[in-house]
Length: 236
Ligand code: G3P
Image 1 (cartoon, rainbow, N blue to C red):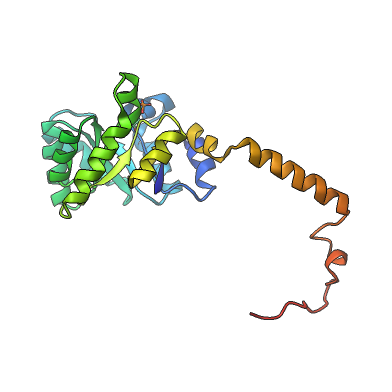
Image 2 (cartoon, helix red, strand yellow):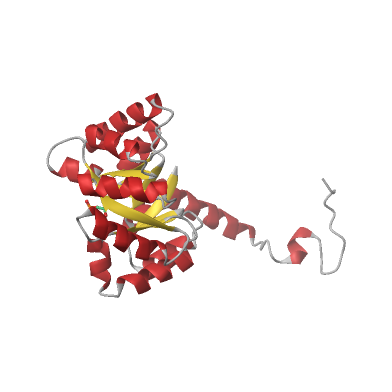
């Protein structure tokens, strides 16, 4: 499963990209607005930090203006993916972008019917919003299951399921079980995925026991290979 980071915050992106676990970035107008910065400048910086796909969303609602905006965004860097809303105009723009070789992430998907349309429009990704469905008492993961089942039934559907509006690790784990291709994670959720109390407890115990040995792995006296002496390891 590929992990994208769902933020436009440069500091967060830089910090998490250093983990080697970040395969791309998704932004949207709300996330860009939170930065208080110029969109194009932020997009340039994100694309320079993360070589993987970086979704940049158009602000227009009509196809022609979406195309103008999207072409400008695509020119910022080669790893830009254009994000369009799942509307008739958005899918017309999706088809046009796809035909000219520009990848598209179709966002604000809330039903399997919509996801079928996104695939037919040639989207590279469809972004079903799991958390916002949960927020209204629906089951966002049911939508992921439906989309994965439908897409798997049609080999000519090349669109990848990009799970969005993720509210916790459970959304990631359950979507992964279903075979969703990508999850886009708020930074706090990726960080939370590292955490387990038994890991902390186990590491504390290992370190306490190691301290009792009085040894240091880097201290060459400990392993008998004093400076300059030949390693005793057999070559594989
Ligand atoms: O990528 C879409 C995501 O940013 C929406 O998340 O939490 O606003 O539903 P949320």
